[in-house]
Image: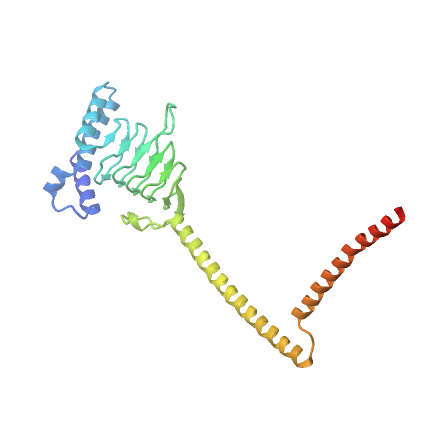
Length: 272
């Protein structure tokens, strides 16, 4: 009992930079209080005593905001930082030196009996708001990013982020790294890559637009030079030729219109 207490105090001092002294940790750390009450409830649960373990768990939640089923198995040196909203299910198993932050859920995914909650290895860090669901295993020395939803096994020394959780780092160093705010964000990386691609396309479109403007200006100059050459050689311009064509069309139409009238007159004379 006293050995567990010393390990709890050591874990709080090592992993919480806000911890100032032992007395403060003993009196003002709800994560520690929740673990102590759980150990009592778990012993009674293992002894087969009905109702009382659940009442202790209920009181634990009311006092600390942390809900731990009395059947959950929790190792040594576990530290629950802040703790509000943490939920640990009946068949969950947590290894030594694990760190849990507020809002973490170690829950199930259905109503089946038997093993239905996660198994968390040693030296694991599960960041704020992460949900680890189902009878899966989180390997030793792994990290789960804030807000991640993990529904598949995670190998040892890996980092998982996203919804659903994806492994973004493999075979990391086996240390307890509390800098979970610095884990990679694959979604943001993808957005930044797409943003870079859009900028490249915009630059290419701008170059193409300038090239088209230059080609259009060259075409205007060539047209003006062609007109000057036509004027010097006395070649009629395209506008005059267009006017001639239009005049010819008009004459042709007038002639065609007169012919039926003339033919009608001849027919009238024959009738007479």
